[in-house]
Length: 289
Length: 289
DNA sequence: CGAACAGTTGATATCCCTCAATGGCGGTGG
DNA sequence: CCACCGCCATTGAGGGATATCAACTGTTCG
Image (cartoon, rainbow over all chains, first blue to last red; front, side, top):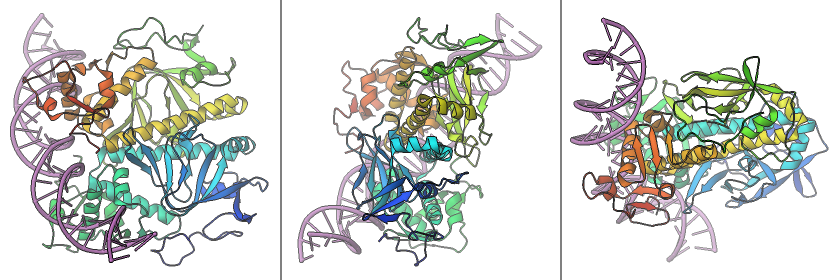
């Protein structure tokens, strides 16, 4: 039902005992529920002490493509853990423009930006059908008093999110359009890999417009840059299907050489990727000295 | 007893003197110490329950201009609360370039980006002589078990920081150079006001280079933009001394009109600020539709 | 099938970066 | 004291990266 169709049929995670390969939780009264341990596992942080508590169960909720998990200003009652599916979080500026902040997927925690004011500061929208676990905030805090490992996990997840945003600031502040798109693809590939999906071939869940907003660029620049990467053989592009051909070059790319960017029907694709300039190969057109 | 008097005789410019008169703490054995309540007050979050604990004291440490409070990769032993002075936090990218992430000042909490990995993810450098309170991380967590208000405060401070970074991402992702500088000045003015200093006249603690890194611009662009704002009468500039003349226009500014930007000796400064285009006055040269 | 939306590509405009020269300011040492 | 030096800031000229505007195609979905 979830649609990472670009990959071969491979069970995404080393399947654990008592639930489906991709989704945590067990049926009860027609809805899915997860215990504390499953939630912690999902958050991907190696909890020193494994939490075992079968009494407390957290309810799953499904959201259809386009539905909002929470909106700006809404009172904070829950945090949310994504169990499956893809979302975006956005800020709406004073004149109604959307700024995409992140593309949460399986294992990500939503809502922590609302803890300070007790009202969500951003909006979370499903980009595909999603399965999300509800964590009643007050109950969660109470639980953390019983399970120090959970308290520890909360701090770490929030800190991790902070570091991610710092990295985003560095990308927006210092990198060229091409480098931003390259990093975006690498990060996406790594996240897919961490989820057990193919990191070589995947589908983008978001529009060029949304990618552009996320990276501080226009949709046309996203489209052009992907085409340029395709031209040079770094990736393949077909609409939203992306194939990663040379992740190492993407990882270190600072800027395509002018020749590579200009080429159209001309001398394209020599087998050696001398078209690129990355940190390892100091060339004349590097961005930072 | 202690002297958290943000209302009092205010030094118009917190310029060269090393310590402002608004410092918490009491002397003991030649060094300053603060109790838990003072720390919570400093963090500026209205703690529902006031924490009273005279037994636990936190040590102050002084840093001179240029000294580092913590560095990237260093083991996380403390969080730090700024009691006085000004700092920057920076990321160092793979080729040694500095990316400024924030300009912490009184009441800001440093080090939380290190909680996840137990190693600081960024570097904090003093931009003036600073007085900083050491919060031993483990002790802090232990204390939070005794004082629920402190636990609450920790979550809120981290969430607040997250929201600040989201705002930064939105600025970098969506605003023009002029709008970024304008927002920077407004934010700075508001923070000075919150600290009890003048929001109309203050000294920048950082170089144009550092502002540029922070805002994703070059030092020349910062300089030019400040000059342009000065030209139009929004601010006065003399080296690092900034006078705010029209904070409302700065707050809503999207872009200076081409005319205003070009003017040099020409028809400058009509008394009505029709030079500006902000969200309230839709003009032809707005950035977003 | 057609309308709305998503994506591609081209031509042009422009914002901001890069490179360069100059001047101010604060230290330091003769 | 003043010359000198390094760092910071200002300003100009020019170019390049990216936005903007526009046309066209492909896709989706009622």
